[in-house]
Length: 474
Ligand code: DSN
Image (cartoon, rainbow, N blue to C red; front, side, top):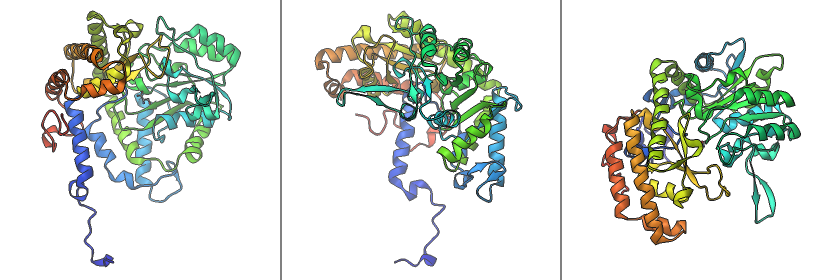
């Protein structure tokens, strides 16, 4: 065995030297992000400042508890980080510390939502949230039916530990069916109604939600994860006027690191104690202080005029993409968008969302299959979800998004052509994409376009892989 005392100290060895295998994968990932068109509505490219926090000494520190009341010593500096983050979070959303409090410790959005349910509800209390195929999130309560077992299957812990009944979007308008929600809530009497979703391109009628909640003695929670950047800059309606609790992730339109936050109303119901104790010790251990540092520094950026301009441009870009697709004869759910994303209904083209996702991936365009209003099966979604936040961060403007629409139009036509030969099976379709000259043509154009735009987080000039097709290109 080596003599420990004589061994060299290796703690300052850079990753490239310490672990060339992992370093190489990260460099490939950087190249992938730079050379492609990132259209996943929930993703974004964060700043170098945020990345600096994530790779900082803050990751070394345990700090269970709240600032000033930790279970570990040596927390004086991380206390300052968390207090700064909490102060900036309230400021960024224009909230008075007398009326609202915030917990910035959730590791991400799902733990944040579950902490609210754990803190404010009893096991098996009733929840109503937007159905997953209507654009809701798993954590808003979702059941599916298992054909194999012949039973209802609770997919997320929300429906394992609580009873949930979904509300839906109207199959024709694509808008939340508030009348159905009102009728069903009157019967179901939920303890909590959740608004917000992952694939909804229109405004939320918070006033109507509040009325329905009040008719049934329900709490009202908004999960603003997707639109938290738009809300901070008043580019979407204000949920804080009507809701009891507002949760969010911090890495979507807010453009911070991956983390979560819970805002709660301060009043006689003492949500503060209940939510803080649900986060820790009920559900989580030590907060990830490097993430909290990253959120704090992102919130500083959120309060700048530049960030407001970014959100305005994100909306313009999503609208430009939608309008161009419509002008090319495509069908967009609800006829367009009021926020950062669109839902493209591919059923008229007889191409499934899964096939479109696969062919786009092969062309270095990243988006995801998604249910669209009117879909009969959630297993084979009839469309794709497309978002503007990430490419807007890279300085894409409306004309650039129109060019993206043309690339998507070419891609769906190519999908139809390939499917006509491969047949309907996804496996055969995917096999036909490999080495296809049409795919290569689109990919080359995508790479040329994407690499002509700047990139935050890291300097492309310093990447190991700079060939625009990427090291793994066919
Ligand atoms: N997975 C996220 C999304 O894509 O919308 C939600 O958590």
